[in-house]
Length: 236
Image (cartoon, rainbow, N blue to C red; front, side, top):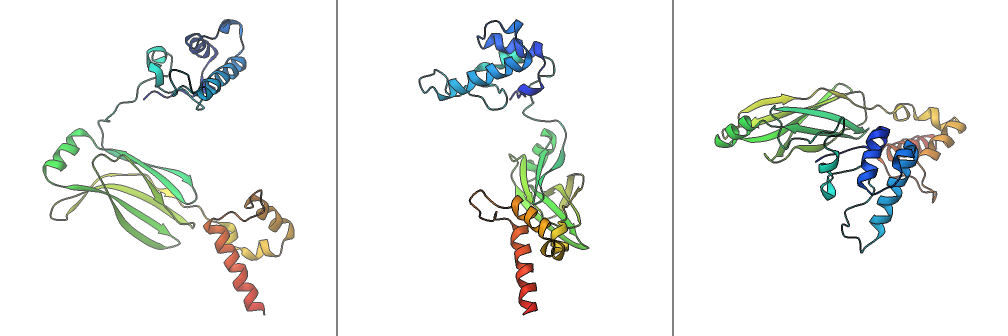
């Protein structure tokens, strides 16, 4: 698939795409005007149910719908991503304080060899949090290339290994990701600072309150409320 971020394109690249989209006079338009016209065109076409190609719509970028690869493949910085990568490797990206995104590639040689041997593959997750260590495996298939890893708040790290498991149960590490640090929550460690500081308390509640006035449902908010309630009960 080809993915192009409109905001990252140069004026000449935008004008090339605008011509393919039938926007006249693009050579005399500014970069901002071309982006605006492209957005309007994709939004209008996306709302028109009679349009020949319903997949044509603005999605904060351009993809290879409507054979657009024929038009943009020669643009600078645009290349088609391979379906298979030649190396066996795994990477981690932090999505937020509670989730990591793991993605990996298994070389064709490794994939063929392991399947011929009757082996399986797993993600071996290691989480070290405040001195405590947790390890577990997530079974994946040879067709999988990505997974979301749940992590706790705290002080430590998480790393994931792509591991082969033989029919006899023996494990062989194929690739190891870099470590991603866990996210610590100051308020979980110092709830009294927020409880007795009215300005901080109101500020934090504003950040976790919906427009209807309800608290956002997330583990940190629940744990802070439980700490407050526990402390209140102990004061009675």
